[in-house]
Length: 205
Length: 321
Image (cartoon, each protein chain N blue to C red):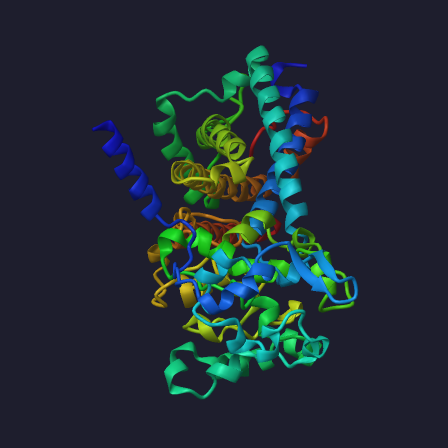
């Protein structure tokens, strides 16, 4: 079996599933906290916060695991951005905007050196290495919120953390929506590949 | 020189009032002195005709009056017998006096032009609709909340806001946070305050920083008429009632009523407007930006989906032909 047809490693499939579930939980509980009201209760706010905080802690562990595993395996090299990606992203974008409606073949075929297309690579890299760390750090700082609401200086820290946390959350949610849509567009095979032990880099039409 | 400086600092410190109360310092009234001789302390001496000697007796806690607090109280310029029957001038007091009717605020203040600024008529009207009046009728009166011997009004001064809040809540907590006092007016047991406010995140923080009546009454533009204490179920539970631009806290003693609670000078007033507090304060601009962002993304996806289905359908038909 060549590199191209190897299934995704177990740790990656496990991490992806855990990460996906946690992200969905965090988005939904985050929205419930954001628009919470004591008179319109879906779930008690305390339960929502408990789920959000617990998911956040597991996400931190999962993220640290991902970084270490990436460092120890070849997987990390698929994420690292290069300047050429900006140019290649335009080609990929052109494919998504009209190329795929004309039957144009995928501009970037999967190969052992490239697991993601340029847009994916940029999106995954910025999500995993910029947005998620920002979320994790600011979320962690807001853990003990009562301590932050004591005086003016700490409130400013809280405000900055909250602003970054919520803004990053919006961007990750946008990523999640597009990610799910493109997974749907590419067909069920992609979903099967990352969840189950089916072959990896499937050739595109 | 150092000594003079220290004296000046001491005088300055003495002048700073951090109590949040209006300081009155009424002059001591000589006619009250015989009363306070006994009622001003925890024990008193009375001559027993039967025993033919002076007896030391403990004064019932509810009848002990601090002369210092009384002098600063809103009614501190009154003689005891202005409100209590003349019969109290004799000691020991005749037992029948215990059953004398006690004055209410309205007995002195209602319908009098001089006291119009106290809004007693509207206070009484709103009080009559309160849960206290409805549940307890005549057994409840003004004095259950406003102790006539030490009742003070809070300053409408935002710099001492926290002290004013504590002062305002003392009246409620006297019964609601004390099972013995509560039993004096009700057969029930007082609810656990923190448990009862469990729907609020950081319940303790809220209870310390706002007045009970802010949520448990219908606030009017002045604080005088907020005596219609609501049943628990009807009390305000919505976060945005406070955590919003125009909120209930700007009414009454804490604000100018113009909706600008920056004037409230809360140490944490920033969180009222400009930051995210779960379910309450949201940065409106960021909310609009996020809505536009999500709207744009969804529009893009649906447009893409439409063209993709169209292409796939045409492609399929083309192949089948």
